[in-house]
Image (cartoon, rainbow, N blue to C red; front, side, top):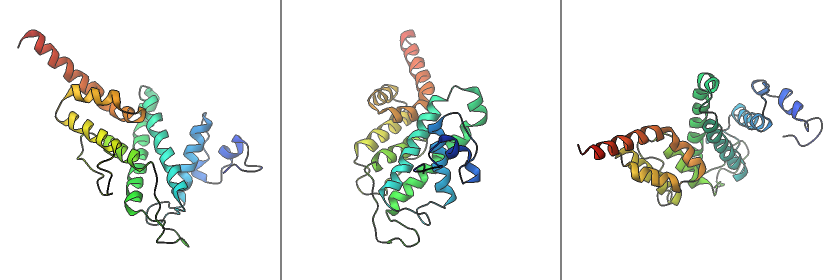
Length: 211
């Protein structure tokens, strides 16, 4: 993307980027690059059915965009300007990217003009992304079970345990699972932490009063 002159400078990569919708410059160079990469994939119609999926490297790009979106949303969660102007859009983008990854893993084929339609594209991060699909909406049904082996993976077992603990209001199991969860999984779980903390305090309060 920025392999040679004049595309080696951040200013050229950000302000002079060749996609009109990606020309808005932000303060953070890493955020700019992730935004530009995602926009580029979108502009090219990158999807399981019509996108230009050449190999696992393309999946890794989307994997990394997913991780960045989760991390950024978590770190900015208390910012009033972010909550007012960007949070909903950021979470909608994350939802779209996760849905796209889920479909890609299910399809499992490189589909683009000139590609070998029988070429299977896999990623070692599939189970991690599957867990994020489950954790993105803890109130939804257990899903993402289309691919053989995914249900039995450590990542998704953790995510499913979290969902069960949340639904059955088992706050002890929920917080125990959260302590064991990797960082980005905890970021997604944090959305219901206030609710589960309130439940725990209310339950303990009732116990102390002897009601």
